[in-house]
Length: 350
Image (cartoon, rainbow, N blue to C red; front, side, top):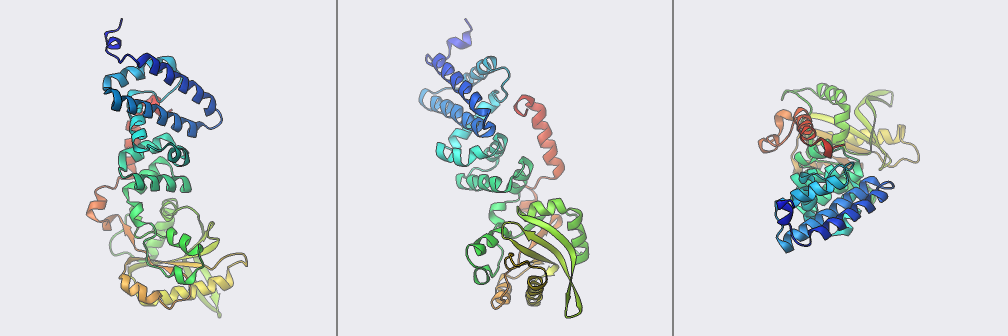
């Protein structure tokens, strides 16, 4: 008899048979709902392992043997490696409530959950990123990027006058669509840059720009012409937000926010509402995206403005705070990290 098996707990065979039955049952259900059932299965396996470790003092060698036996029984099933079983244990420990697992964590892919286990230790913050992943349909790399850029500290933070210019719940939704600051680390621009250059670079990186703006933004155009009183005016960037059902005008400022910028945006929004808005559309929203701002000056500038306007800042690679820039992976680093993981554990990523 294998000496290692002699060292296993007396109830190990019964546990192994029980886990095999759970796997077989889950394989049938997975035909209808692959990801949800897989994540729930992993949580239940992890809960069993966690419970045995806590109550019976199981060590790492038991997990090693468990992985071998399960893989022998289910040779076509990936994800039963020692490393993944340990992730299952951590997953069950991080999410002790099965109802929350069903409603949240089981709605995103397993390796998204592994990213969250590795990178987000606070349970409430982890749940927030799960919910945003579900809302936005983030890929794993986008999720990593959003965590590394501390999205939870940026979303909904820009000063605005939405509460006085928009009805609820539209005002709350509009508030949440704004970030402060926006992270344009995908741009490589000098500190002294003209607004036309910033506009061109954002358009050249439109996909990255849309990811940073968030879900729901549809690009309409740049330098959009408005004829007002036989005079020509041009919007830097025009979007339509599918959830808010309104136009979003973005005015780019490469310098510090000035009070007159609010008056100009108020004019733009009035013109867009009259000239472009459909009768079914809601009031247009303005975003004055600037390099710097004084929050008090912004609040005074927006106080008596009757159109909804937000004033967030943006950061480019050269202007990222040191503590944030140090943690930010480049796209090349993200790809290298993913390739390394795939090479090390190819059976887990099929």
